[in-house]
Amino acid sequence: MPPFESRMAANLQNEVEIIVNSTHDGIIAIDVDERITLFNRAAEELIGKRADEVLGRPVREVVPSTRLPVVLHSGEPELNWQQPLGEITIITSRMPLIDESGIVIGAFAVFRDISQIVELAEQITDLREMRIMWEAIFNSTQDAISVVNEHGVQISVNPAYTRVTGYPKDEVMGQPCTVDIATGESVHMRVLRTREPVKNARLRVGPHAKEVIVDAAPIVVRGELKGSVAVIKDLTEIMHLNNQLRTAHQIIRKLEAKYSFDDIIGSSPSFSRAVEKAKVAAKTPATVLLHGESGTGKELFAHAIHNASDRADRKFVRVNCASLSEGVLESELFGYEEGAFTGAQKGGKVGLFEEADGGTIFLDEIGIMSLNTQAHLLRVLQENEVRRVGGTRTIPVNVRVIAATNLDLKAAIADGRFREDLYYRLEVIPIEIPALREHREDIPQIAEQMVRRINQEYGRAVTSISPRAMDVLRRYSWPGNIRELENVLRRAMINLSLYENVISEIHLPDLGPECETPPPAGTEGCLESEPEQIDPLKSVVEEYEAAYIAKALAKTGGNRTEAAHRLGVALRTLQYKMRRYGLTDNHNQ
Image 1 (cartoon, rainbow, N blue to C red):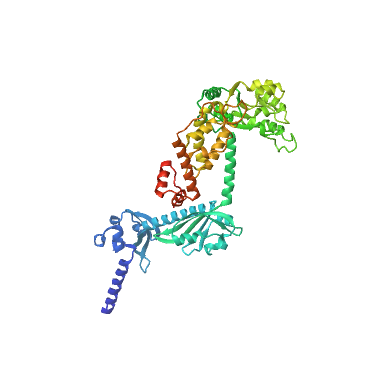
Image 2 (image 1 turned 135 degrees about the horizontal axis):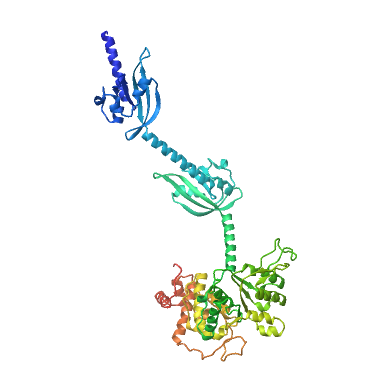
C-alpha cells in the first residue's frame, strides 16, 4: 500500500477509535470464534472491566448473559432488548457483521444504562397521576378557587368559581385578578403586595355582587413569590347552613331536657322536701303533677325529673297548654289524619305524644285545657294509646307524663272546669314547689348562681351582690318568684358601669314600698320577717362612694384625670380608691 494510503487508513482507524470511545453507549464486538475484538470505554464503565483485560477472550467469560453468540450464528439482529446487567438495567441492540460476500464474520452489540431513565419515567408517571388527582380535587371541591401569577393575572379557576361568581372560565383567564370584584379590595393584590396570607375578607363579586368570604395565601417556590391562591366561600350558602343549624338546635331544645337536679338551688326545709320528692319520682314511671305559682321553676323540676329517669336518653317534649287554642292543642298533642279539617297538611301529622314515644312529655299549664281535650288525654293515660284527629285507628304509645299547673285544680273540679278522673290520673305523685317568699333564705344561693349565668350571657365579670342589696332582695315578696328575681338581676347588671363588679342597692330597680310587717297572704310588696339590718355607717358610705366613682369614670369615658378633676380629688387619690373598691379600668387614657 502506498505511503499516502497507509497514512489515510491509519488516520481513519484512529478517528473510528476516537468516535467509538467518545460515545456514551457501550459497544462490544466479537469475531467468528466468539472472541471479543472491540470493547469501548463506555463498555468498560458499564461492565466494570478494562479493555486490555477482555480483548481476545471469549465473550461468555466476560458477559455470561450475552446473546451475541446467538446473533453470530443466526445472522438475525435483535433490536431494543431490555435486560439486567449486574446491578443495572440496559437496553441493547445486537447485529451481525456481514462482509461484502454476505458471510457473517462477527457480531456487535450497542447498549446503554436505562436505570435512571426508568426511574425518571416512573417519576414522570407518578407526577402525571398526582396531577390528575389534584386536578380532580381542584375541579370537584365546592369552594371556588382562583389562582393568579406574580403579576396578578388569572391563570386557573375551578368550576365552583363560575357557580359562585357567575363568570365563565374563558372570561377571566388571562385577565387581571380584579375583573371579578364588584365591591372591595382584591385579596390577590394584597397578598402579592404583602406576601402575607389574608383571612376572612368580605367582598362582593360577580355581575350580581354576591357577598363572599375569601381566604388567600401566597405561592412561594424556592423563596420566590410565584403568585397567589384564593378560596372563595359563598356567604349566602353559609347563612343558609347557619339557618338550618339554628332550626336544628331549636328542634333539639324542644326534644331534649337541659337541666338536672344540680341546677336546682335551695337548701331550705320546704324547698328541700320538694326536691327530694322529685328525685324519688324520677326513679318511677308514675305520672307527676307539679303544683306551684308562676315562676317557681316547675319546668326546671320537669327537666330534672326526666334527666334523672331511665328515659333520660329519649325525647323530652314540652307543651304549653295555655299558648294554644283548643283545636290547635288537640291536633298538636294527638296528631291528625289527612283531610281531618280545612288546612290539614297532606299526609296528616304526627302528634307530640307519638313524637315523645319512649320518653317524657311535659304538659305545662294543664289547668287551662278544655274539657274535650281533657277527655282525650284521659284516654291516653288509661289506655296508653292515641287516636289522631279525624282517624279511626289507635296508636300505642309509651310516654311518661309530667304535668304542671299554678291553679287550684280542686277548685276547678268544683266549678266543673276540670275532670276529677283526670285529676287523680295526673296526681299520682304530687309535688308542691314553694313560692320564693316561702324560702327566702335560699335567695343568696339562687341569686349568686343567676349572676354567674348572666355574666356568661352578657360578657360581664360581676363578682357579688353587696350586703345591703342582698337585704333588699330578701325582704321583697317576689310575686313573680324566681322568674322575677332573674329579671331584677338582669336589670341590675345592665345598670352597672363597666368599672363596677358588685351589685349595690342603687343598681336594683324600684321594687315597691317596704313593709314593716308581713302583708296578708296573696298581697304583693316587701316582707320583713326580722328587724331590718343596720349596717355600719362606714360600709354604707363606701358602697355609695364606689358606685359614684364608677359613675364618674363612665361619664368621662374612662379618663381618670378628668374624673378626678370633676370629683374634686387628686388623681392619686382616685387611683387609690379604684384599687380599694376593685373598680376595673377598661378604657385607655
